[in-house]
Amino acid sequence: MTPLAIHVNGAPCETSAPSLQDLLLERGYALDTAMACAINNQLVHRADWPQRALAQGDRVDVIAPITGG
Image (cartoon, rainbow, N blue to C red):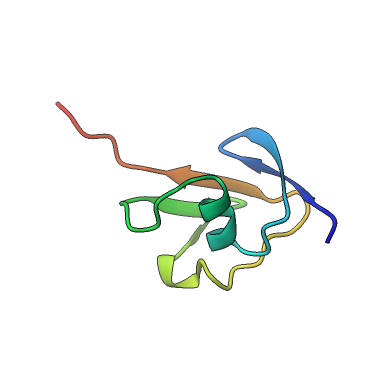
Protein backbone atom coordinates (compact mmCIF):
# COMPACT_ATOMS: atom_id res chain seq x y z
CA MET A 1 0.00 0.00 0.00
CA THR A 2 1.35 3.42 -0.96
CA PRO A 3 1.64 5.77 2.03
CA LEU A 4 -0.91 8.56 2.26
CA ALA A 5 0.23 12.17 2.47
CA ILE A 6 -1.98 13.79 5.11
CA HIS A 7 -1.71 16.48 7.79
CA VAL A 8 -1.98 15.77 11.51
CA ASN A 9 -2.56 18.82 13.70
CA GLY A 10 -1.29 20.99 10.85
CA ALA A 11 1.96 19.09 10.27
CA PRO A 12 2.60 17.04 7.10
CA CYS A 13 2.64 13.31 7.73
CA GLU A 14 2.95 10.13 5.69
CA THR A 15 1.10 7.08 6.92
CA SER A 16 0.12 3.61 5.83
CA ALA A 17 -2.65 3.51 8.44
CA PRO A 18 -5.94 2.59 6.78
CA SER A 19 -8.20 4.10 9.46
CA LEU A 20 -8.29 6.95 11.94
CA GLN A 21 -7.89 4.52 14.83
CA ASP A 22 -4.85 2.92 13.20
CA LEU A 23 -3.33 6.37 12.67
CA LEU A 24 -3.86 7.29 16.33
CA LEU A 25 -2.18 4.07 17.46
CA GLU A 26 0.67 4.58 14.96
CA ARG A 27 1.25 8.09 16.33
CA GLY A 28 1.31 6.85 19.96
CA TYR A 29 -2.04 8.09 21.20
CA ALA A 30 -3.68 6.09 24.00
CA LEU A 31 -7.20 5.40 22.80
CA ASP A 32 -8.62 5.40 26.34
CA THR A 33 -7.66 9.03 27.01
CA ALA A 34 -10.02 11.97 26.66
CA MET A 35 -9.66 13.43 23.16
CA ALA A 36 -11.70 14.34 20.13
CA CYS A 37 -10.81 13.87 16.47
CA ALA A 38 -11.87 15.64 13.32
CA ILE A 39 -11.07 14.93 9.69
CA ASN A 40 -11.36 17.84 7.28
CA ASN A 41 -13.14 19.90 9.97
CA GLN A 42 -15.79 17.20 10.54
CA LEU A 43 -16.01 15.59 13.99
CA VAL A 44 -15.51 11.82 13.93
CA HIS A 45 -17.27 10.10 16.83
CA ARG A 46 -15.11 7.72 18.84
CA ALA A 47 -17.28 4.73 17.85
CA ASP A 48 -16.46 5.48 14.18
CA TRP A 49 -12.67 5.68 14.56
CA PRO A 50 -12.00 2.01 13.64
CA GLN A 51 -13.88 2.17 10.33
CA ARG A 52 -13.25 5.80 9.34
CA ALA A 53 -10.91 5.36 6.37
CA LEU A 54 -8.19 7.88 5.65
CA ALA A 55 -7.70 9.40 2.20
CA GLN A 56 -4.92 11.25 0.41
CA GLY A 57 -4.79 14.88 1.58
CA ASP A 58 -6.95 14.45 4.69
CA ARG A 59 -6.46 16.96 7.48
CA VAL A 60 -6.69 15.23 10.85
CA ASP A 61 -7.01 17.19 14.09
CA VAL A 62 -6.56 15.49 17.44
CA ILE A 63 -7.75 17.65 20.33
CA ALA A 64 -7.04 16.79 23.95
CA PRO A 65 -8.42 18.77 26.90
CA ILE A 66 -5.97 20.91 28.84
CA THR A 67 -6.15 20.61 32.60
CA GLY A 68 -5.05 23.09 35.20
CA GLY A 69 -6.21 26.40 36.39
